[in-house]
Image (cartoon, rainbow, N blue to C red; front, side, top):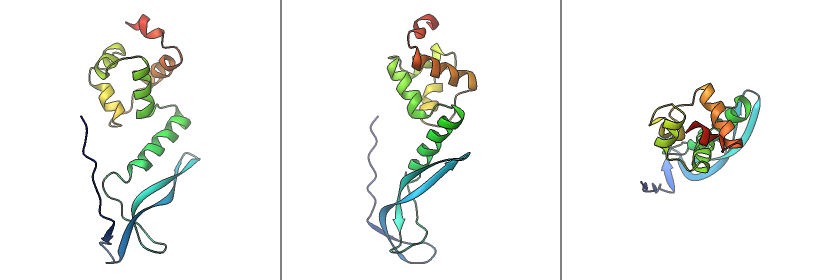
Length: 139
């Protein structure tokens, strides 16, 4: 299902200070257990230095970066990785859930980032990524 892209105004007034803020991006450092990555964080920002206001899906870039770091540090596959592996195996979300014995709706939740797969499921997803032929044995 396609979603309508939200169009945001170019400016807004800061709720706390009344200062004029302009829509833009600024660098933001995301850190997880000693690993860091810089992202361009969209939001409304003052002309000089200062705190921004983030609305709608602005913080999703931080969420995505945090999930990628967690994947790198702890091996928990990110929603994007889970979707990529499932697509590589040519499985629907429902078929993947049945194949891995995690429930018919689990992959929908994994791919939307609502739930992380368990340790064994994470490991199986990694193995299937490297050895997709194993999916035939699981069937």
